Image: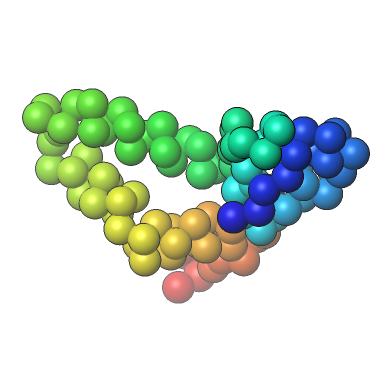
Amino acid sequence: MTMVNSADLRSHFAEILATVTEEKKPVVVGRFGQPKAVIIDLTTFKLQQMVLDYLSRLDTLNKSEIETLEILIEPASRNALSEGLKDLEKGRFIPTDEL
């Protein structure tokens, strides 16, 4: 994980933001040599929020929600989902009526 200090964050914000959003790599922001925050892309943040929501309701989840949680927690499945979403964003898909 990349770590930058707050001065570098200000000076190179556009580049750091590109790294986070395009490469899906989090960046740790430090101050006085101590980590203070992490910048992550919005998709990752939303997935993390979904996982936290499911975990907070673990005892009341239905079968579909449990399956979704398992996909989000398992790294290979999560990465495959992420790659599929990237393909959708870039228009790389075949409509079902063409299959």
